[in-house]
Image (cartoon, rainbow, N blue to C red):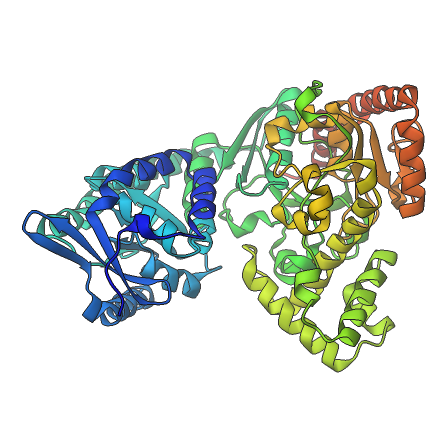
Length: 619
């Protein structure tokens, strides 16, 4: 028979990861939650199901039950049904009152995942319950979700006011906000939560009056031609987009360097992004709008008569290509980084389309630091194929790896081409489709069903390619920065050469501190230099990279600005040559950095973009 227990009695396998992930995303809020540790001793818990616990609080007159054992499942089901009814009636943002343990939220988030017109706020005046949640189950789906917010405080109303103002929630529809209690609430807690809808209605009405005045000014300015000489460039990005946001920051800085004003709106969450974007556009009234991998009409009103730079940095076939192409219009000017994307954009209605080489995300040359020194360094993400293919029968597993090898050897072909060329069996294709669905469910980025298999095989082949080159250099001391998925590749023997995630503010110094910086080009950009190439050169690092077609285009000179290699054998030979020649490494550092400064800075890219826009844009 289960017994009530205190939280300290649990040897949790979840707590450290939940805490660390929450701290990374919400540093200030996590401190307030951790400070509630002493109050957690007032609570006890009783297991009533898998990762489900009744909860009571010790008080002077006995116990107050927040989740009752005898009514737990019924109470949770009723809250879930009520929440779903709110959404069906048009609610956009659901306030889960007393949602600290996350039971209701974990159900709701599964239903609305990927529908960015819907969000959830966990209102909690007992932060110690969130601390308890970190012990009880894997909270990553909630913590990582870009549709979930935490509003934690006692009293809760000031925290809700701050949250509503920050996220521009006055742009919610008339019945867009609804509250659904999850656990038992005391009388005073119920009264406080009942104030929120009344306060919100009054605050929303007042905020909208000021918003309407700014809208009128915005419309007047939009009727005038854009200033393409020294106007205002505007962009939006999510800090969680670890590759795109740094490049967006540097591009905005590049426009500033050629005499423009620049504004980058960094969006914390996707649900409220449309509200924040709308408010920010009215505030800054831009002359040029920059987007990455997206058509601006997905979040900009048609009356925003401004040229728009749509930069395709990734393969368009992986992000709803038909929708992307159909949304492009005459105000959109598409710049794609890889020449293989040209066909995708050949028939779109955009104002113009052309290839544009990327630049660096870094703002300054790096500085050598002993703690970042390494003989060889690679920084990159990694999807390991092994866990996805391990349970296949040996024949099917061999067939799957043959497909990955084919994708690596033929980067200009698709995964579907690989399946056809190798005459993959129906059984293998079916198993891979099943795994691609599971893979799609595990990542934040929504993938349409028709591209899941293609993206899945690309991701695994890309990881398989990186493994080949990294393993070839393990005995030569290569140091890796990236996710923990790299650890099985390193094994116990080389585990000390894995250093975890590298904060972006240390990236330039890391490249400058390594003797040799390795780049392994992504399979989704099969012909072009990528951001990492230019980051290394910008920082003053010594670059070696696998061969791509654009190395023959004169943008950078192999042997002068960097070294290139063809395969594992060639890589080892070139690494040994560079390792034995400090003078050659110095020459590559200096010449590569000089070439970057002369031809490839974000300011150079801004000037190239403006030259196209001034030629193409019609007022």
